[in-house]
Length: 197
Image (cartoon, rainbow, N blue to C red; front, side, top):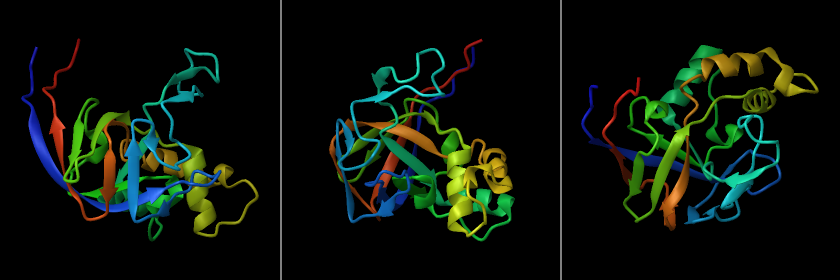
């Protein structure tokens, strides 16, 4: 079995956002305050969450560990998705992102267990990639002014699912508490990797 050695990559935080309302759309904030329960005030905070369609092995609504406390996207991948959709831009807040990174190639491909260690002391542990959905696509459709009562049923919403595949970013949980601010540098510590066959 081939083993790829561990390595480190360096990036920068472009924006920090919090989804404080009932909607998943997030807004720019001065800083993110992270505890073991996630981002203070964010709708995805909590040590646990209810299972949904992404966990068909549990009855819907089962309490489970919240590995989706923080949603992360990259400037580069959002630009790729926008281009593929033929629109000017996608704002990270429209799809509920908490952190926008730059400088990490193919961010969504970072493997599970990667540690994101920030200059201010916070550490996040990557759970895995965030699969794209029509809810996010519908939010984009709504924000760019497409007509329709149910934006998640627009062609753009369906196209987003295809265009954002393996470009939608990551979800992570808090391993070490603290604050994260825009402009902060971080190191991605990638463990040894192998393919189990």
